[in-house]
Length: 585
Image 1 (cartoon, rainbow, N blue to C red):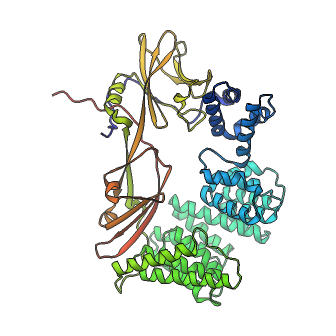
Image 2: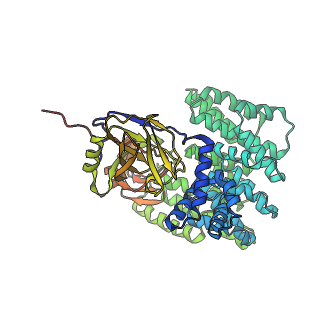
Image 3: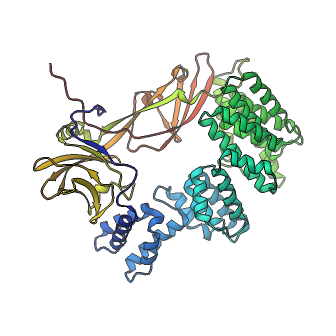
């Protein structure tokens, strides 16, 4: 039974804000208490303290460095292990295999390091910033170069802020360049334009500014600031003559403003730039793929293939990219042909001694993919008139999220919520743990100040929440993470007793737009795992909500064409409340 999101009988409700209680001094006391617990006689308490210190992260580093010199060997060992992870940026949400690679990175060969860094950077993106910054100081200049390149490829404002915070005074050329790039990324579009138009930049710095400009324009596009974007893109196009991405971006803004003729002219102009250079077409194609402009991207990949000589790395990539586009548009024979040509070019280059690798795949997996495409082509043959089409809009897939209580306790939770005087949504420090499942954690009521807070080892670890217990006792519901706890509070003493705990599951239901709803023979994936499309339409149960859902849906259109739609959906947990009170008849 799905828990209703309608309110039943609420006498008081309040949500705790972003902050977590008491400021720096309170957090320091929490950290000191947790560090002391590293040497507790109770194993469970030592483990809980270790986990929470890992989640607190850099704020605990100073206290842990002192603990690393403790006379207690248990405290010393645990502090040292936590510090090792902190210095590498490893957090509890890192996949175990990537954490293992980071911990053993220094013991690897040069090639092993490069592969490990690639996996960490591509798998974790901005969560890998601390690790990458630490490796920019590597004595091996190649590794430092790779770290800088991966760092500058993240394109995240949060990552840039972290780089500025960590680097401070750069120790080498790699850190200097990464720091300059981060600062330019965080600057406004006018700032970046002013620097570019002023000149006086070396090639590397100029390229960094251009990339920063691209990201700033893409950000304006996402915010639908079309007029500003059109003007800025035009100026960028003048300052970075020859970079087709700027006229393409200006065309996106003008098309959104209804100036379709100017937009078409700009796209034609952009495609005609650099008739003898492959790299600019590659950069344009990559950006157009991000914009879901398959038709324009395919033209850029085809332009690369028309530029001699044949068989270079850009040609191989162009064949692979075209294969992806053809596959998504249901042109399976063409997709197989493109992948076949790309693989043949790769193997020829390898046989000639060129150092190449296929990121995220292998020759064997590509051969399997080609065979699967041939089978799909036989089952879903393309009509002569079928062509490449741009992707279906992201709003073709929406999701709804409902909450279910584990162990079938929906009725019990409803009954408890009907008795409470208030429901609190608590965010605590350290985040990410079921705080009330930890032995020394408790809810505390202050009868004089009439407020509630969460305590850990008698140290406040949440904001205080105004609340008044009316009568001798009052019941209260507390939502935190995926659990709802019921407490009974004594007015005179402030003592809070935990009466019940309810763990929640989440039911995710897909709501397709008209285009997707018309598809037949649908196959769906969420974050790489296969799911039944019919089940997704009915609702699929998850233990925990992923922050991001990468969704891939493949199906057959009413005219028999096989297509693929890929979107990323940001997931937010719905609030939980008591059920609706039945109406009297």
